[in-house]
Length: 150
Image (cartoon, rainbow, N blue to C red):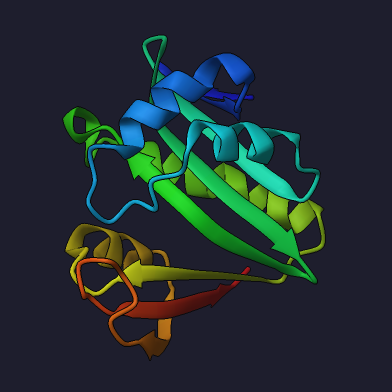
């Protein structure tokens, strides 16, 4: 667990799942995991599931999975009231540290071409667009495939 001012980034716990479930419902671009899927993710040994708290409330979460030396970002979501306050950056910092400790050398992700805030964040963090999946999301938008070396 890392603390910076009123921020805490820590591993997710079962009691966080209701807040995570409600956080992801704000965003059209989120994968909209079921509660059962979130519970299962907590049990996985290859998962990095983190919560960012601000003043005691879970305001953001990160889910990624480690596979053959890569961390695949599955979901990153921040409460709309806490956008651009550093929650996503703190989660990425901690997730990348944990991924390196698990032997990862690369991070990959898919992001909607319409999700401009996420694209901006990922490009700021050095991710490069390496491919595209046409009409990947339910709304008809395409997914950009992005990756970054750790």
